Amino acid sequence: MYTVVRKLGEDLTPDELALTTGTEVLAVLPHERAVAQRIARGDDPTRGRGALRSQARAVAERLLGDDEAPEDAPW
Image: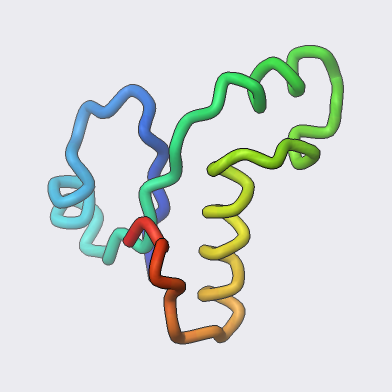
């Protein structure tokens, strides 16, 4: 089991969260205001091309079996 966290409202550090939950933090995803704005307008939040989308895809690829993380992976 893994944990993925966002960089928003950081009450706990990723290390503290891993210790509290007993899981490995797989990634820390950035917060993008544009995603929240798209959701508020009723647009598709996956249409963006920012860091959140690319990092979320990298996490999904790793979870689906690609054991090697990219060099620029946030974990």
